[in-house]
Image 1 (spheres, rainbow, N blue to C red):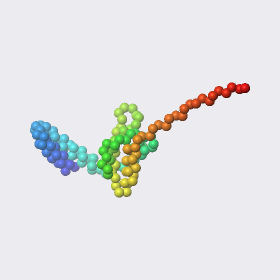
Image 2 (cartoon, helix red, strand yellow):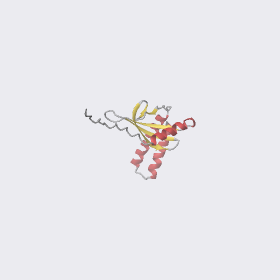
Image 3 (cartoon, rainbow, N blue to C red):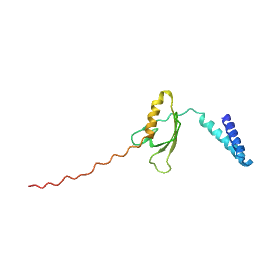
Image 4 (cartoon, rainbow, N blue to C red):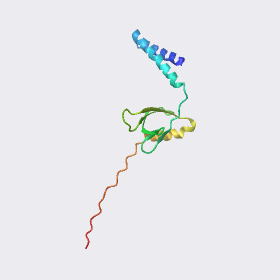
Length: 138
């Protein structure tokens, strides 16, 4: 964690010097760099949690909850996806999903990528309501 803070502060200091910022802005940049380093160290410390991602034909499901999935960054071996919960009142729940391709999951990631870039299915139209002609009795 300390190494991340030092790296963040060093980068912020370099950027502030390169942009010739005022000393007060440089101090703010250094504090922001330390905070970013601490945040990175805190999030990177734990093991990655597996996410259950599925397409049910109408909506994407992340850990069983339906929503929409959008590709934000596609770097071939690495995908960054943004998922938004569907329905629900108030502010929508959002979540970032990272997909990494390893040797054994290459086919799964290819299928996921194909599903993400495919056009969404169009709703099936209702059959027209046709009324049978009236028959006259002879």
